[in-house]
Structure formats: C-alpha cells, structure tokens
Amino acid sequence: MSGRKRSVRTSYVDPATSSDDEARRKSTTPKKSKYFKASSPEVGTEVSSAESASDDGSRVNSEDLESFVEDDDEEVEADQSSEDSDVPVKPKKARVTNRIIKSADDAQKRKIMKQQSETDEGTEEGGVDGEVFIAKLPALPAGDVEYKANTIHPNTLDFLRQLKTHNERDWFQQRELQYQATKSDFDTFVLAFAKTITAIDDTIPELPVKDLTFRIYRDIRFSNDRTPYKTFLAAYYSRSGRKGPWAGYYFSLEPGGKTLLACGLWQPPALDLAAVRESIDTDIDSWTEVIEEPAFEEFFGGRAGLFKTEDKLKTCPKGYPKDHENIELLRLKSFNVRMNFSDEEVLQDGIMDILALVITQMHPFVRLLNSIIRPDDSDEN
Image 1 (cartoon, helix red, strand yellow):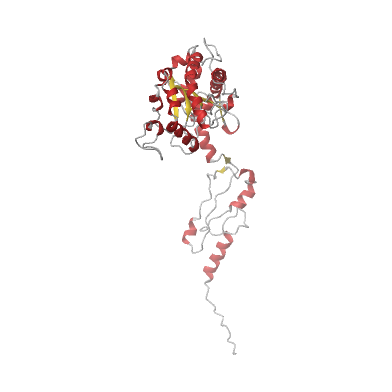
Image 2: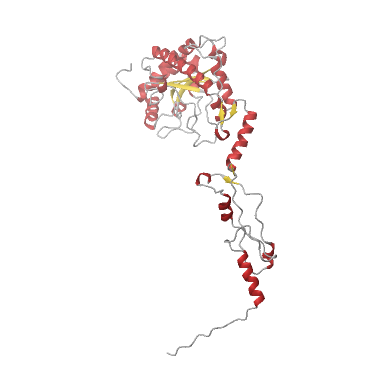
C-alpha cells in the first residue's frame, strides 16, 4: 500500500496581530500580581476570586456553609475592551469576602419573631440568634370560690369558654398552666363522681382517673375541622372504664349549657347490636318495664328520649318486617338517654347530689343493656 505524505499547510500570520494576541495572553495570566499594569492600554486587569481570597487571608470554612455569604460591593468589573476582541473572556467571579451574615431563613424568622413580640404580650426575645421564649401565663387565682372535690370551679368553665374562642396551639401553650389547673379540677371531680356512681351501681369499679377521662387533643388526621383541641372535658364510667364494650355513664363538661350526663350504648359492635335487636323482638317486656317507668319518662322522656338520637337506620334492619310493632326501637344503632345542665347548675355546691339522682334513674337502663350484651350469673334476671 503506497503511503501518501501528509502535506503541512502553513498560514500567513500578520506580525502585528500576533504581537497583540501575545500581549493579551500575558495580561490575563493568573500568575501576575493583581498590581500588574497591562502593557496595552486597551486591555484591563483581571484578578481571580481564588487569588484575591488567598491574598487577604479570608476564606469560608465548612462551619459557614449554612450561612448566607454577602458579596462585596466593590466587585471586579468586566473588561470593557474584551467586548471588542475576538478572544473569549470568562465571566468574572465575585470576590468572596470575610463578611458572613445570617441566612435568609434566619433573617425572616427574626423578623416574624419581632412582629410577634410586639403583638403578643406573653413573648420575650432573647437567647441565641434571637430565639423567642413564650412566657407561660400563671394559673388564675381561685378568688372567693374554693376548689373542692365535689364541685366544678368557675375558672374551669371560664378556661373552656376561652378555648372555644381561641382554639389555637400558640394560645393553648401560653396558657398551659391554666389548662393544668383546669384538668386538675376536673380530674378531682371525676374521681369524686366515681364514688357516687359506685355507691349506686356496684358493677362500676373505682379506677384511676387516666382510665376514665378522655384526652383534650383532637384527632384531626381525617377531619375537615383542623382545630387542635376539644372544647369540653369528658369521662366514661363502665365496668372497664372508658374502654371496652360495656354500657355505662358518660359525663362531659362544656360551658354554654352543654354539660351532659348520658348513659347507654354508643354504636355497639355488630354482634352486640344484633343481640339488642333480638331482645327487643323477643323480650320487649324487659324493655317496657324500664323505659316506660314513670320516673324514667319524667327524666328522659321514655321511648321518645331514646328516639332523640340521629344514629338510626332510615329503613328497617335486615331480617325484620317493616310493620314490626317496635320498628322504631329496632331501627336504632345507638341506645342512650341524656340530660343537659346549665352553667348555673354545674357551678352550684349541690351538683353532685343532682347527678346522683340522675344516675339512680339511669341505672336500670344500663343494667338492662349489659344483661343483654354480656349476660352473666350476677344479673338479677
């Protein structure tokens, strides 16, 4: 195979142009000092950011990476003569200075904290990086009314009344001491009420208060209502406390005449619901003996009291005829009666005696329901 020699092509280079290009390359080399004066008046001097940082001894270490670096106001300007030149010029880098400021997030956070401190009388600014400490308000003084086990203190209702208006975490956390005083007053009343109930219904044991009371925090995971707290305090008394399948007594404290004492079953499981409906179908006499008793009708309205609940079927349950004589009872999915109390009644010294009288009328109904869903040898029937 015959080899063909590769021809070397030479181009004519203008000596004047060559000398100008060489001068540019020399003027832009980073090896020169930043005080180097360009040989050509048309070419400016460029200093790299790395060299300038090393010269003045200011470098950003790893501890400052989370901070926002402010650029120096005296930036190195781009060479104007390079725009007229065909030689590409790299964009100038801003020099890194030793002035480190707070990050943008910290600055914004500090601004918000300052605004909050001006509007919220319970906040104080101080500490590291302008941290805000929320000063907790003290518990309200008892005043002329003494805290007692058998009564509800006015401060307790007043806290719940304010919570309904300010149902927010910041407001609640600032008044945590007031909430603790409210909870303590309610817990003491719950334990005293437990002794009253046990004296009437001996199937209800005396349990620790944590097994009787409900949390004030709402579960908002699947709710459109995003308010974080309940506006009432509640407890449930049954053979197993607030948990379990038993019928029992429910007490909730809420201002505005909404304090409630109720008893019965609330949405029992399918097997228990079927047992209750079977009892209505086959043993209605046991029901009428309780719900048509004069005192029961006077306190709760008899059958009409049971029908007040909205938790019921629109049609008859499966397996029962539409013209059943007790179809209204069979349609129910919850079986309970209730009584409300005004704020004046709740705050009076004799509230425990009033509740005891109501529990006495509720007891036969609770005993009937428990004998149906959990029959045992201890039941009278």
